[in-house]
Image (cartoon, rainbow, N blue to C red; front, side, top):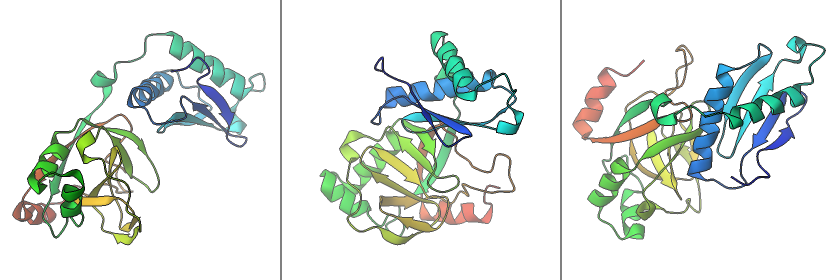
Length: 237
């Protein structure tokens, strides 16, 4: 990370963004996750949320709870500097591993054949490489519970679709460039779809409501169509 980072950028009157880089870098993102863990351990009562993203970390606070003798941006910048000066938490020890079953059946993997052709691999090799990649959640955003997952095998790198689909089914697992995503909702999307998971990835009645959190490791596991259908009978809640 360059000495100019992190940059401290106001986000309105109740949040600060600490920008760690201008481009996506897995090592920098890992540091952002470590800093997020460290900040939560020392979180002032007036801080509402700490939100790590691809290249930065936002801290949201409640102005009504900030003591009169504290200037939020200055206090948070000092706290950030102190956390960075100390030994950061070990992300490998703190991160969870989320196992995601995926059915790569052609009826679900709408772009599987096209990806194989683009990458000059067999369909079986695409599936094997996708499951073997060291995936990690870089951030959760775009829609509730929607993870951006880094670590995709470089041989599977394909650009986004020229024309996005207006409807992508919930549970779809897709790739673009260096990342994978899992669609928690039926929404539009322009990534190449490899398969679909029977898991439910967002439930507002749960605490937390989303399966994924930034920093989580993700292990995709191939399942058959029969196993997919069976899993739908006992969905995760």
